[in-house]
Structures are given as structure tokens and as C-alpha cells.
Image 1 (cartoon, rainbow, N blue to C red):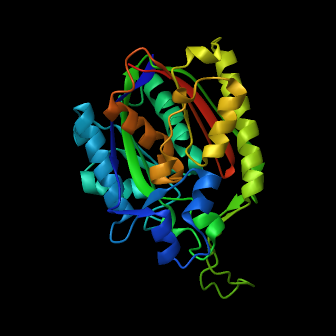
Image 2: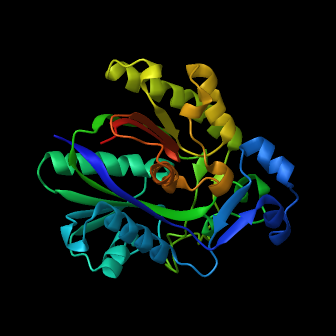
Length: 321
């Protein structure tokens, strides 16, 4: 017994912001050409009045409806996120409150690899008989974490939520998660001392930091390694994969994979031009769009690859049911 994805759903903020608008709004020393040629990004969704809890709950409800399931069917809720409006309770619990769920609900922070971590946990829960229907919600409000005076980071990210319903099936053929520990290349510090009178230093919360060159080097090397390992593990040649769904961080990283694997460009769907890097939301958002467009058909093989802060990496192969 394995798993299948029975339904998907998304939710996005109202504001769809172009590169030119972003440069004006944030008073950044940048241009559309500078951002687009370096990243492939032209637009992104940025929250204004929307809460992450609201977006996540809407995406979750949409996925349940798509799967023909109800909240009472859900045995476990896994939320892949950097965090919601509150450190505690977890964003998963706030989603459960909105959807009136009473099942186990917990957040996972695997950064941009979070969705694959959730798939792995869902597979284990279903295979051991601990759950039959699992709701996975990926939700990120990256606009709350970046420094809007730093063009090297704030132009890269977008907000949104994507969800899927996972049930028993035969679709998951392979999954692998790995960490190459490095806590410095991408980091987001938070104030953990509060007003503790015994703490020697009270550090204010900081913005997301990313060493772009090191991230690029990590990503291109580990991405190729993850893809080739996945193919070798289930004895498939690169041409047997119908679509490679790669974390939508930067077009140049995906172009690198296309060059190394020597596969047709149309096997590597991309949507970062409209959404930017949405962290854990990236792959399920892309998956939902492809389903909506009718691009994915039963029997097709999908290879999912993600990389994120930690540095975390993951890959899985799904035969679509």
C-alpha cells in the first residue's frame, strides 16, 4: 500500500505585484530587467489584509471539496510552513479551528522542502494504518519575513497557500529526504529571550538572510544528485519521467537541470514568473495548476525535487492515479 493525491486546492492574496510595481512600492534600487534576467520572476502575490490562517484555511477547504471529502473524513492535518500569526498555537491548529477539525494537527518546518516532508509523513501514517485521509496544507507569508530594503531577497518571494488530500493508493514509488547541515546559508533569527531579566543580550527579531551564491551552488549540485538517485533507485531512465516538478526558486537553477539531464524543456513546468519563490507552497501550487490545466493524466510519472534552508533536500517519484 502506498498513497495517492486525491484532491488539491490553492488560495492567493489579492495583490498581484509586478517587478516594476515592487520597485516603486518598496523604493528599491532595482528594475524589471534586473529581477527577470537573474531569476525568471516577473510577478508575485503579496498579502495586505489577508492572514496566513485565512489563506491556508481556504486552500484546505478547496482541496477537500476537490477530493469529495468533508472535514470529518480527515484523520490528520500536516501543515508545512515557516509559521503563522502565532508561534503557538500552530498554524495547523488555527486551520483546524476554522474547518472544525478535531484530528491531530501539527506544523512542519522543512523550509522549501516542507511539502515533501509532509508527503513522507503522510505515507508513513497511511501505510501503518494510523490514518486513512490526510490533509496537507502548505502556507507561507514570505512578505512578513523579508527585509523590504534588501533587493537581493525581497524581490524573490511571494505569499500563498496550497493544499492536497492524501489517501491510500499506489502512486508513491520513491521518496528520499536528506539534510546537509548548514544553518548559516539561509537563516531567519527570532527573539527567543523576550524580556528575560537574566538573559545577557536581548536580540531583536531579524529578517530573512540568504547567501545567494552559496544557495545556488547547493541547489544545482544537490538537485542533480537527488534526481539521479531517485531514477537509479527505481531503475528508470530520465526520459521515463513525464514531468520534473522542481522547487520554483530561480529559473537559472531549473535551466541547469535541463542542461544536465538533456530532457525537453516542456518536461520542466515553471510558474515562478507569476508567483516567485513561495517556499513550501511552491510544488503543490505548481501541481494544482497542472491538474487544473489538464496537463497531468493517470499513469504519468512525476519527479518532485525541493531544497531549502537547513539545508534540506528531498525528492519523490509519483505515478499519477
